[in-house]
Length: 560
Image 1 (cartoon, rainbow, N blue to C red):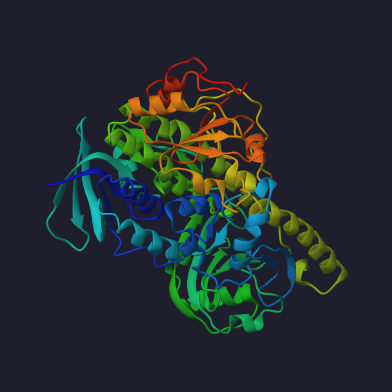
Image 2 (cartoon, rainbow, N blue to C red):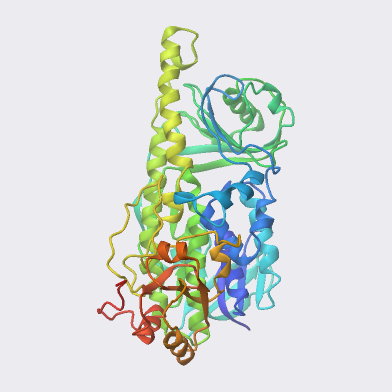
């Protein structure tokens, strides 16, 4: 019998993030995944800035930024009729090397500790696994699968087994998290249904897609335009997109199927034919893997928790992967849930704190799947006629129409600070809302606000440090301006509640102005829990934030 605090089914980004968050807090965590190891296929290819900030908080953002494309490889997204033919539109984005420099001078919507990074999920998972396994309290087992579980009220009893066969291993855990993907065994056993829409059909990014992971060292020799990170092919014959995996020879290629095509039985010869159609030239390639997948999802589970069992990541929400939101939303699920599990396991919070996970994350999943569907409609409903590739006045007109559409679309999907930073927990029972007016939730713009329930506004300090680097791993009380109020009441309340609170003084006037209050309480997941001008009621603020007063109706703080 193995005893652990948290049993996690699924060793993808969500499960591995849970292992890292719990491991660094000394919480016993066992992760099982039926696969032999981390992902072989590229899968997700974009790590958003907020996810990079969480990797920075965990100490390995620089490692992630060094992975994938070479430091000076372009990260542009280019729209072409075919890879070897005409370019229609392009959005230019900073290289990995530029991002490290540029982030220090960016303000407004893109004021951040980290910028996005274009890197295959396969590289990210390997790094996350390596770090997770360094924690003495984590037990990461690939090649093991969850066979059964039952919630016994005070614990969860489960059986796990080697995928290749062997004796069942019995596990007793305080909690179980199903981070086991779209076909989640955990979700199905709980009987939790999907809400939302699926089966959306589009010319592109709707319905069945055909994927190839390939190596083609000579591919760039047929490109007539500057290199990019992602290439989107728009023509009447074969819509497709392709992302560079290593910046040298490996690519992740995805093609839409035409009506009547059944790609599940396609041979390598079929794969080469489809690839040539999208490229517009015959290019030698080595097929590393191939298969099909379904686009056209915008699904969110109707519940994220049942008793001591939770679901997260793709088990809880399914995206069409426009905007790269599925993987990034999954990481934030783990960030949100982990500190709450740790607080309950340590006895620092009541069991009811865990109810805030669904209250906070389910609305965010609905928001983000909605944005992904909007992006998919924008790119996928565009009708590409045969004239688009003709050398004729009609062809010129069609290409101008496409150029205008995709220049606008590229900025809609790939310049999304509002989506990345603007997610909020405005209906959360553990946030001390202050009633201030909020900026609009728009995908392409973000107005920093310290109104409780959202990401803290970021600032680069006069000494060159990121404000976020001063935040504690657990709770942080920012004391801002040259003469902030005394923080002793918060410190006393934290000791009484056994909360690990660190007071951080920042005298810089611009930060005080940015937060519009001299005091701000930052949660372990770097969310503003409260802000105010005095420490009056500090015990109630901390009790609310840790779940003790989650059902209280009174407003706990204001900014006046």
